[in-house]
Length: 112
Length: 117
Image 1 (cartoon, rainbow over the protein chains, first blue to last red):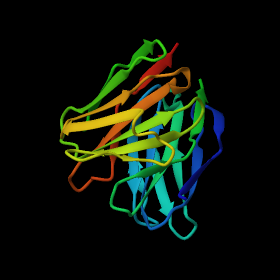
Image 2: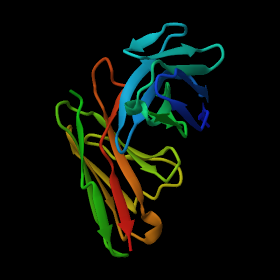
Image 3: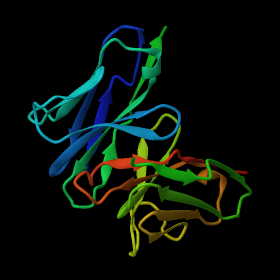
Image 4: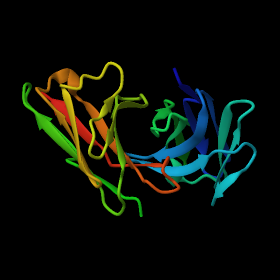
């Protein structure tokens, strides 16, 4: 059974700090790893990672995949209160049906 | 782009009634749609995968006769919770995947909070 574990479960930091969120996985025939941000309702897509060692970057957010360690990290620099959310990691196994297995998420709270 | 609309956002119903939830891809065609359930402080649990024009594929432990899924077109999938009971109260959320090069990116609707009295 595919499994995704995220850490920490929750994190509280001050505005301006840098945070690193972790995701480790066990999946048969790994295809991709995705990061989503869930604020109140709908998760919004952040990154999709398929290749090891290639950093994806969007503004203050960046992410990288390590296939050898079966893990990924999501970095947020110069955090802002608007970054407060639950960050979800999901992996897709190559069964051809695009099914995602989600972790329980990291709840990030940014204190002004 | 890649907007998914889910309706209603919240529904309260009496035990024994049926509830229909709609999921629409507004600006793209979704060959595959997914239905998830999310309990408080837990992650998204996949219930079923819906492909346009064919029967849905249900995950283990999900009753297909209770959670009816219809994917009538490339932009619409519906989930009907039949004979709802209080234990069906949850947050239901759909997603849609495109058919292009980014087909394994799922875009999510805003979810439906179901409360069964």
